[in-house]
Image (cartoon, rainbow, N blue to C red; front, side, top):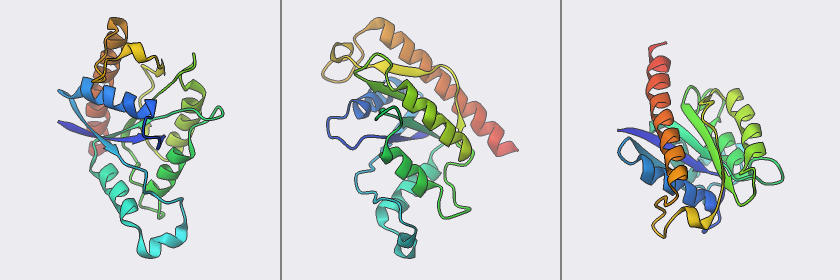
Length: 187
């Protein structure tokens, strides 16, 4: 089973994007193993910290390195992606020549209570991911407008059209990882 490092751009305990990552993990459990990386102890990027790198940084880089793909679950703050995501990206791409994201098959999803479900923030994040060589899946895109009645208490999807849409996304992402992972290792 392919392993996916999941980078959630919110530290909040009750984050809807963290819940969304768990919804997708549950939906994908027979095809992909989602490893949700805890970013709560990751310090702000500071090049001086490489002298004695904190364990949280080494763990972040290890888990991304060991993954077959990476999923960014992005809230939208002020029409952009979050500082938490940017910080994780900065640590993951440093020191120079040690970019753990390079050539990883990846995807971006997100949710918000608003109608456009993090679309603008995801667009900006995709630009950054291209510059660090994440091979990002283009379609289907997921800009989910979060509504509590879409899911039950166990985060199972209860709305059939939402379930069908997200199952399609999981299928595409699993195939993307298989296809891109094979192409990137053979080149």
